Image (cartoon, rainbow, N blue to C red):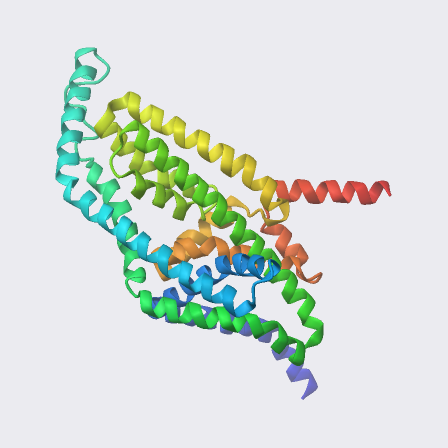
Length: 358
């Protein structure tokens, strides 16, 4: 009997792998089907994570916890209402002006093509951009706002879950202390890291969106608030988010202001994102929260496919959360290192050299 079991044993591990793989596929398929509800919960969690920092700050200033939560809830209502009103009206006006932008682009392309042919740069029949329509790119931005707006349209559900999460967080540590006292310290460490990440990221993202909106307003690009809001939202996606946010604004500046105006817009985006994203943010955030751009890009595509627009936004915070949890436990710290970027590796190498010298 023992010998027959030993013969079967090599196949058990392979069978276990396929069972786990099939289970993951089933779970992901179920998440894709239930993504409407999951998006609402994730969005509520995302807003709750941003709200923890201000609540803790008000508590340190001597304000009772209940009053701090109530002020945060009221602030949430005001900010979201203004966002829906301002961005919603901008999106509607933007869609109405799409035919005008198409006409301007076609005229610009015909003039550019004629100039290239006259100076012998291209053949008369060479027209690779003939089928290119700026509406295809600009509509992607409109589709993003539509997808985000669909979830924001369920404002009441997001708001209710958000309120319950705020009150639940205030007693979560006490519950965990009663159930498993040893885990309280590690959970508090994870929560502090999350609060730090979301607080700093929200501040830098808002600054990025604000300065971009001001810059576009000065340049005379239509709907600067809309593109500033897009920069604010997509700035939560490291490395590639700011690049994606710049595309519709640069294209619109090309249509309205010409090549020189588009170049100025590119320079403006580059300067703002370099100063805030590559200089200021790493100093405030610290190297330990850096994530590899490869994992960010793959996660954005993957969760965007599973959960749609909100999944693309939530992908990076989810990886950050996973990395923080992995880094907080010695058993899984090596996996957290694999998720890090070059700055994280450099910091760990410096620490290792210091330990070797000691």
